[in-house]
Length: 140
Image 1 (cartoon, rainbow, N blue to C red):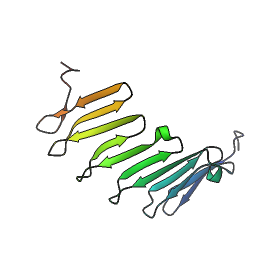
Image 2: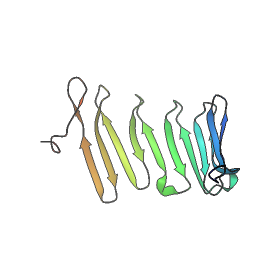
Image 3: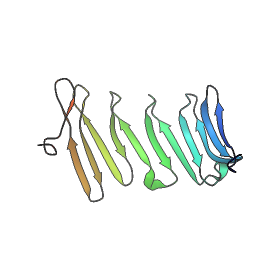
């Protein structure tokens, strides 16, 4: 400990998946994972573990996409919706919602964001090769 700081321990399992971190024996963050090694719970703050100040819980759809992330601070919760093509179509939370639109060929065509005192629609256009074009309103 040449700099006087306690050592940091990286707790891993299997082929190197992170299970947690400790600073001088004090838990900083702990991860719980499912059988596919996807993060399902992250506990952190106030020495983590069963005394964690914060706990982030993640759930997944049957096809493996992120379905929700809920923190014990509800204003930061997020829910995710996907279409049948596996494209993200909505991220919603208590303070903001964002919806994504796609063309028949699967290209992103726009994003609509709503929140308190906010309602923004951003269209996206592409050239025939699929390159995004600048918004003519922003770049005349």
